[in-house]
Image 1 (cartoon, rainbow, N blue to C red):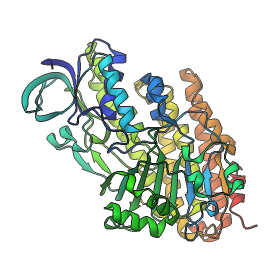
Image 2 (cartoon, one colour):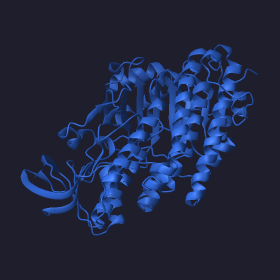
Image 3 (cartoon, helix red, strand yellow):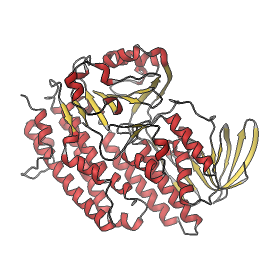
Length: 532
């Protein structure tokens, strides 16, 4: 190791490796050191979570970082797919299914984190980034743009200095702990997950050809969700041939003690997801790992400092794995941090940008909270949860994803000029998430339904929003697109409320004011839930 660096990155996982690559692509002269406590190369299907990436992260990996070649060794993702509980969950064909018929226009991937991070580490060394594994941070000494770390590398103590210090150490949160920046998140959900060194293929759970033929590509390539009251189970295929399986549950409905060991998780699955449990039982001898997290949501008081430090990845904030947003937040964080470092290196005063990016990142985190908080009881209601998922997709592709694909988050002038659009999305979302809770409490008309396929490839406005992400637009066109999207969201909100109240009259007492005229964006979806 050298003694002097421009950037010291504590943590050589996904967040730290991608940040280093992004910085080098922005400013080749930067001297960067990555400090990783584990040995490399990492094992495939390693003790990592976050294999599913969605549109923001996938665009970040492919287009911002130029990782097309490593991504060729990963699996393409057939979107997110959801199966709702049907009585005893013994037959996948009887469950209400929400998912795409074909691959959406904007790409996404299933990542074998061990394999992918090994490729990233190799790329870092090829770019001239100093990557040191088997190295522990012993002491942190902060000073304005003159930080010092005492490192232990196989028993040998070394000292390095850097203008910038980045905490990408995951849940170790080295800098957050050092600065006492931990802040609670009130979303109380637990998770356990494991890898099986075998393909657990949902397409093989039945011989029903009609069921198999209603999707154009293998369902196993989706991030598959098995949904029930207060929980969901993920099934993610990995390019190594292993399968990642996770249980995520509301502690008030499914206590942590029921899922905190592999044996207990098996028992829990046998009770709630017996068809899935039976498939796992056949291959339990091929168990690769088992990990668990209690009350995994966490927050952070500050993410960026004009004094030359920043926090990214799980070291900072984490909300929920549903919809796979973890890598999205890495992409957003790293983009803000890269911009600050490059601007500071080129002699600009970064204090205004630090305040702006901190406020914007905080706003985005707060905006995501209502999507998850107190919403796990809804997951057992096929009708309400399906409409909620479509709503959540609409907001994601209309706002955050659109702005990231257009590289506008660091454009302070543009973001200030268009802040009213994001505020309007947030206000509408707050209203609708509360409405979904009331609706799920009062309407259980879909409980008796089975063998219903909600093909969101056929929802025209939703597919158009996804396709719009790939367009090239100037600032005026982006602003117009945001304005058009807000109009669509407002109409969609009105339609959902009007239709829900017409189907469930007691819901009227909890419904926000609506227009008398309703659009029919989801007319076909609502009809699927009406009795024959």
